[in-house]
Length: 242
Image 1 (cartoon, rainbow, N blue to C red):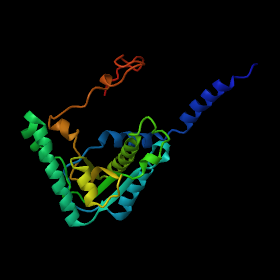
Image 2 (cartoon, rainbow, N blue to C red):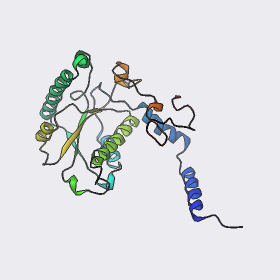
Image 3 (cartoon, rainbow, N blue to C red):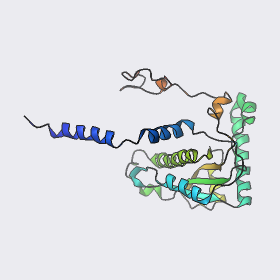
Image 4 (cartoon, rainbow, N blue to C red):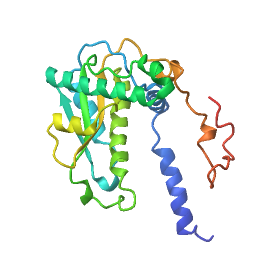
């Protein structure tokens, strides 16, 4: 009996390995639950985050994937009350400017609670490190992959926080140059997120901006294509079924 071609053996082996390496059903369900129940939180209930939990979360973030293994993220924990107040003022200033830029939706936007900078137990600033131009692997034609990598680290932290029962909100309403100045960042470093982290009374049943009728999650069928942009996907059944 002829032996299976090497290429087919490789495919079969990979298929078997994928099956063998799956988590137990309850662990798999927990991963999908964290993804489904993660929320961009704006309402916090004060309290504290135990140091060992915060460290676990930051370790999870640091295990994020990065292009060329460049690990471009830097995390700054804000423990100084006066500095947190100054960051709050920077965010509030940008909130007003953003409202004005929204035109007809200005008043609607100003009614939204868009951050918990002063309310959350912890405030973290995430920045891109200086010297990123030295990392060419995977970035020669897509230099923005440093930001994409950092977003992966933030998502790791977000999902781990949800699993720990903690809320997290990503705030991007700020002038990066002003935040960099306040935090003494070196030239080339760039802040990309203020992360509000801590206990919450409850998690939103749905994304807050959807609950407030600002926007709705797009159906999967509108963002998933086969082979060519706009060509509906085939063979996956009803992709919009919940």
